Length: 298
Image (cartoon, rainbow, N blue to C red; front, side):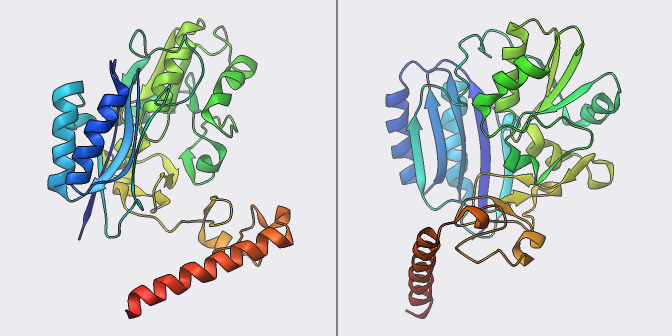
């Protein structure tokens, strides 16, 4: 089976998040969909996967009720199941920032189509800003982009307060994986006096989908929040894996490091791993491998 993967979001008022969760849970279960969907009063954000007909059924519902258009969805495919299960959760925000003044339903930066992005970020007057977490930026980014070195999106406010200035940074171009973080970040900056704030429409995923590899200014691969770990040009799976111990994305070089132990540790977490924790991870990995072998042999 080829899995169709759809990454989607929209900032739109959701009057009854709990009711929408139950409706989506029922529909996704009937259509054998896996993935993660977050529902909040401010909108919907998620990535789902399944057979194409099932994914289309979910998208039809979201388009009809909340205006999430097919052109706004980022599609890709995988040969293996990208999510272990289905999770639909109600949250206060679809991307946590804890800044009430950041409201994309009231004001948001200027959307930049992927085809126009290269010209914008090649202009020396443009400050190019990556709004993702540091473990994501290690996998890839745009050349000359500023990396805020944040561990979670809630830290973006502190970075902006310390490092950004409306008088010095007259034009800012932001990007993130699918668009949701930089859309909210653009609203935050506009609320704090910045005037020319732009962001990549559809995020990195849409850029990789539509911009040919020989024209792309993207460097490396793009971290994704599913079992593929990362994708490259044309949104094809890249050669990255996630550390079972700490979740860090691991390149081939990381996996060749002597501190890497499959299912246990990697160069990023091995120095801080206690013997007790290491032994627990080894036991868990052995149990998982035993179950996998039983499934294959049985």
